[in-house]
Image: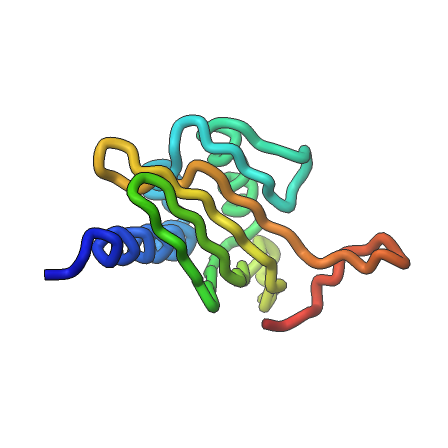
Length: 146
């Protein structure tokens, strides 16, 4: 029988898989179920923080408006799991076909997640998405590969 931490890690990995599936399906309801009501998101879009599930879903709505077809790839997901909190990081790439029909391979970003176990279910309580910054120019470096 697997240890509880192994079970929890597998559940969190499935949660990340459901993010990928929700993006591909452009399914806001599926994505909504993955986040805590009070989620705080430091996403790539302004403002500096998005607080609450409605703000997070507005970000996904923006993505789904921009992309006709969307796909998301996760690489190198690493998790540290405790009893009722966990964190993880990975590289992620949003790609697909834009509304005008243009295909884009997207860009790689760094993603960090904070998870909280609520009523025996893992939810995303915090996420942060970023790109490296060229300090000399002040510009994001969006052409890097993991």
